[in-house]
Image 1 (cartoon, one colour):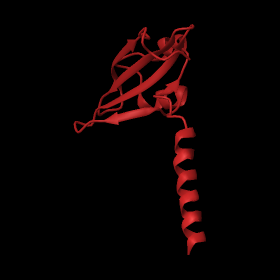
Image 2: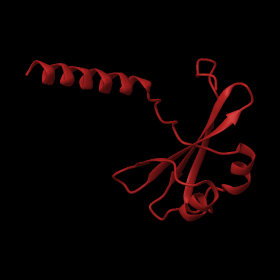
Image 3: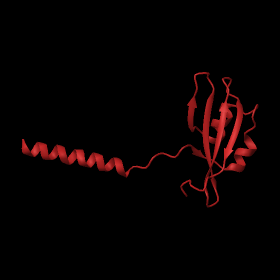
Image 4: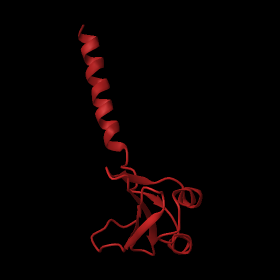
Length: 108
């Protein structure tokens, strides 16, 4: 009985420590900003074109059927630029926004 308790405690400790060793996933797929600028045109670019060009990324689907997609682009020595897209229910990009890295963002 004592051996089982020791084994259980050791397994629990190992599980807790392994959780600390894993990194949080990046907040979106990294793409080249120049390629993004060339391929994404609000009012014309479709969901299928985004997936073909950049692959899947983090997506938030709203009750209205609209979606927000997040990609990131490396900024030279500064972190990442966020590239946020708003897709309509029809799957076409309605708006896009870029947020340059803030001075407080973690460095790559």
